[in-house]
Length: 344
Image 1 (cartoon, one colour):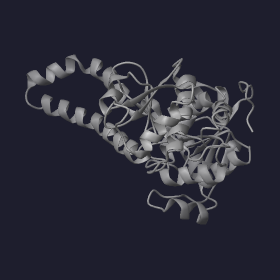
Image 2 (cartoon, helix red, strand yellow; image 1 turned 90 degrees about the vertical axis):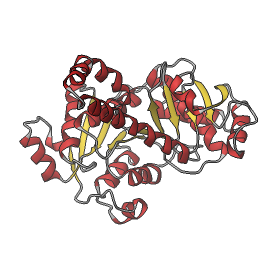
Image 3 (cartoon, helix red, strand yellow; image 1 turned 135 degrees about the vertical axis):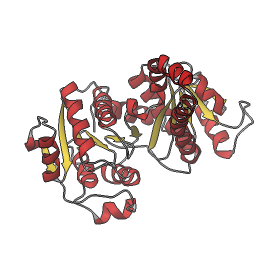
Image 4 (cartoon, rainbow, N blue to C red; image 1 turned 120 degrees about the horizontal axis):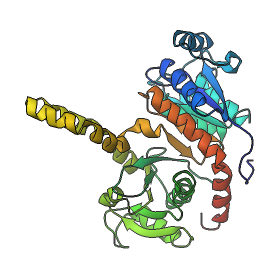
């Protein structure tokens, strides 16, 4: 178990060097960039040792090779998640998850096969006592404040008690990581009225009313972008559709700007004049700025990244893992879940 007070020991972070479309290059470079930026943690790279060393040498990076953990197998993006973690015991994902499970590491970061990462985190690292279903959360850009959606794909179906768990864990994450003092919680539904929703959302609302969470009731899709609610809960099917739609917005906007600029020199000059301002505005839409998404509810820190993660995205994933450790999120989630065990 994790201590309830703030962690004083350095976080031991394992990075899957073989995870992602551009591994090991991006994973290794990004992880070492994170370490060079903040050396208040221990960094371990897991994967094919020779390939990791090659990236380090070719990019003139400085890294203690004794902290490379060899794993000869790789779970590919097209592999069946549960089958892969059974048959590829010497894969970087399985080895990394086992290090956390065996308490030889505190956090595991990977941009590899998402399903395998979730399966390994849940089955190997295990769940926090009392958690029925872990959840993936994602930050959504909004007009004001912080908007986090749980669940965005850890599971496609949820029971009312799972939505309650998402709200509990999401509240802690919003408070500890984003500094929201008393996060407002809402259930994503088809209307704001209490009577609106399906059986799951209506039952979850009844359970949330029994807690001391800052539950405001139902919210609609447009409320996410308003930023008036900090933690939005829904089942993973709806959440994943919402996440993928949001990811497509940035590429659409970039395409629109490019089309506009291609229509003439004057248009191109207009775009150049506001280029820096647009870059800052669109930063909130860029997954690289936030790195990966946390899998909350497992007994260890698990950060899952996009397959196309750049070194910058990997770097931010590692730094987020360290922040979660320093804020002692696992112990705080366990304590809060236990507090509401009579409702769950």
